[in-house]
Image (cartoon, rainbow, N blue to C red; front, side, top):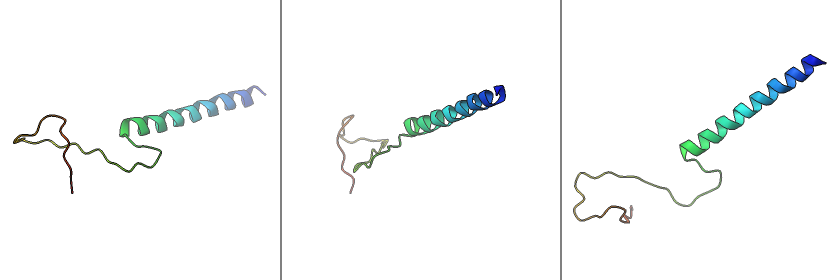
Length: 60
């Protein structure tokens, strides 16, 4: 009976570990669980030629 309790605790610990890994993968990777119609693109320019920081740039 003690062994069954130990197995339950270890199993719970493993499931919690998987949940934490999934949460970290989603939060750090920037993945979303819902459908999104927009994408964030980051670009770095050597010469901005008139663009201000945070300016809206449309990509075709």
